[in-house]
Image (cartoon, rainbow, N blue to C red; front, side):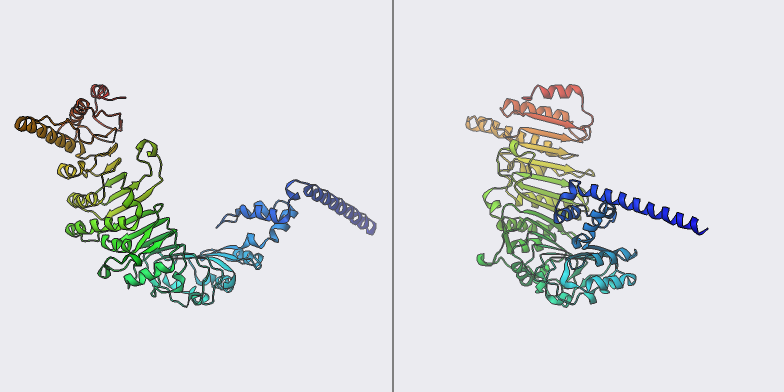
Length: 529
């Protein structure tokens, strides 16, 4: 019996030796593979490019391939420095990541913090000197406040900090004892549902990106807000929702030396009333490469007579903020109107030739959204004060989009047509009275020419309304829904323009209804191509 056991043990030992030799040969083969000839630092960087946030799928692709890869990965702390903690999930993996990160700088995301994850939260936040990025989101005020006690020490390396509280919670004030007010490298700050009661906080200095979306109990004064902008004059992205200075604190226009020049500004997005937005634009200036997005909230009770005075002031403030608006008026305007909102998009193109810039987005861009709008009459009054507030003399492109049967009266368009002498391209979607106004304006022009001939025996040159107009695009329009048949109206306009030497180049129809082939054939004969 003992001899049999000895023979079995000898056979097992021989097998283990063979397995070890096979493993040695596999290791040697892997060693001479091209990718394993790379320096360890370079291989580690390749692994870092495979890391996918908020998932563990990349781990198997890196550590379960061969011994060499696993050894390199486990000895690369930077691979394990992106730690995600979810209050609804187990924390075992987060603890493993933190242990393997050794002394590397940390990027931490905490979602829905709860008492179940308090231990691991305290562990990772107990090393503020290593935290490079910190994102806290979800949960409620009670859960978010449970994290604050771990954020009392200075964070010298912190460059990105975001704190997002769901909208259904009350606004949460952030006290200055967070990080002890010492975050010298903080450049990106995002706050949703929370705010700083002290707008002079050191965390609001030297920022390159600031996003705030909250309705604080006390808004900053214009002076406090201007001071904050001065402290972050190199900001590139600035988004401010519901936290601008109160309208009662709207200041008079500052002196030229007091205007804050945001030299690196790439995008400015603010949400408030027209007067509050104008107040901020009065305080700043920026380069022509900036993109400006204004979400004008008229509040629950809209007063047209108030906005009628606010909007001209808003656009004059915008023009004052950028030298581009002064030097080159708007060349493209896009207007979208529904029962709920009015969106106005304005672009200053560097090229006056609309065919060269038709598909390009370069140039100074302004987007305005006005809401809520509950009645078509309110929309028209708002439009009547918005378009006259901007310069249309160099306008080359006009895009109009109307939904829910919203429209603008013929009289409102008549007031604008003569302000667009170089308009080249028009896009119309939905229903509007643009062509009816064009017809009436042309009738008025014909009447003036006739009166001049009969009274003064003077033949005026046969001018055309919108003499530079070359392209018309009609999209999703019903030709049967107009008092005057739209097809007949277009034919009359094309004939008049043909006789006056203002021939259109192109007419595009897409998704239009109630259009007959005979009408299209008659239009084709009146166009260049």
